Length: 212
Image 1 (cartoon, rainbow, N blue to C red):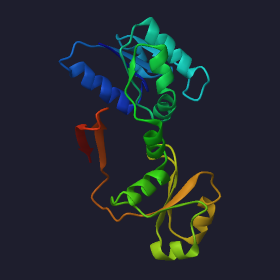
Image 2 (image 1 turned 45 degrees about the horizontal axis):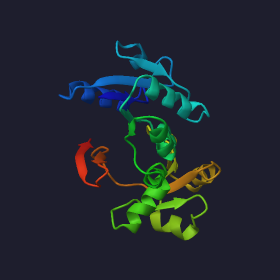
Image 3 (image 1 turned 135 degrees about the vertical axis):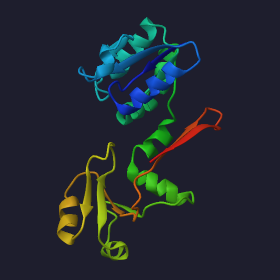
Image 4 (image 1 turned 90 degrees about the vertical axis):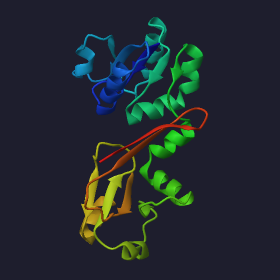
């Protein structure tokens, strides 16, 4: 089974490749990334430099690699790539023989947007941090939450573009930013947790792991 893992150089790509390397399956693993300095592009395994996912050439380049090397499975690992590939999954699977391991565009679009994620959790009865879009925040909402608050970009990862809002002047500055959301600050003192669940196409959970 030939597997192409994208997002070369990122932590998730490294973890996926390591798990595949340790698997008992008969695999040939390829890696692809847009960073020419990514270490994984210089390992002994076959690797490929690809355009950024925002590029018009990105999907075509992936399809060429998948076809040239008869890749069976494509695993994207970076947020921007996951969104782009979910949008183009049908096209990729039509033009190649690869199966694309990515969720539906609807589900990925929710997961890619922190505000939509909070709204989804709220609407489905899960615990969630109270969250407001830039144009949803009211004086009443601010008063109900109280300071400190959290401001963050609705998209992106790696704990980037997150700000502590401790006073009104901080909030005014944050609201000048594009694509920002305001969230209650959770009073969690014993570290940060990340939970990951893998769901198969049959909608059954295949694995779950929680990191502290």
